[in-house]
Length: 354
Image (cartoon, rainbow, N blue to C red; front, side, top):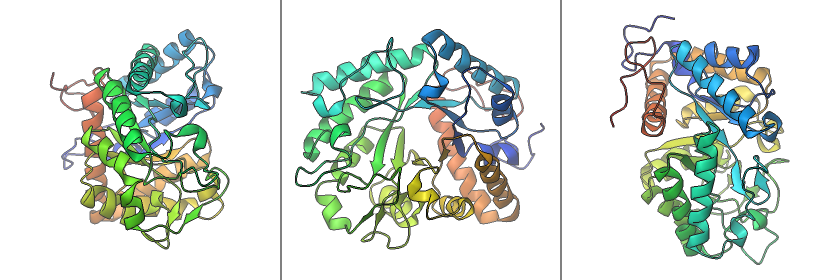
């Protein structure tokens, strides 16, 4: 695969398109499908679920084979991510350390201990991104969907403990992801099933829900995951994960976030029951959201890739926006992934600075 001579990132159009995708897969061993996703779809990252895990040794072998194939294909190294929040959402169970969850953390020492142990265990099996911490608040006056996964109702506590997790995950070499922007704790409907609608404007969110995310940005969090909630006071038409008003105007311009943004899983009912994939991808591109997450192996992955690739080839504005997103993705990879950058290979960048 020869890189295009007129692209400043030294990537082919196919690589520019594929880097925008983080995808799930079915197996526990490196196979022809992973070979295809990495080598032909050019995915920027893969997501590990319990279905992909048998043991630490097996997982280490799997992730190592994925990174080796990316190198062999001249691809940038992969983000390899997992939901390891502790408590009810933890894809890696014993012999990995099982924590009671952030809802039961007593203080910052607990947050630091969780982050340091989790980072060590993730890195030991080749995982370099944790979809954590959850920064959603859980008001006590409602049956919040996030009660068991949240630091609770206090924004200052969530900001303090969440920032401790971010700093210590990232100082150990694991990318942290603050979720689910701009906060889903005020909802009672699970977005895995359907799309919650929250009649909340900027003033209400700014008074509490946005404070932990502002602290995460100050802590230079590597990623921010956007929720599938429709906040009618911010954007009456689109959920945050597809919204220019939320992803660009609020998060980037008003709050000053310059890192990687990503959707929540596009397979979830909040999107799948209401918005077709082509529309969702169009909205992601328009809002300049960097990574589209498709967490189950289906033809949607190929369809999303083809649509992004077509946009690059047919629209100079979308090509420019895509290059900005890929630049953010690659800059973050270079900051945290220390192997796999081979200068002079097709599609590669210079080695990262020490």
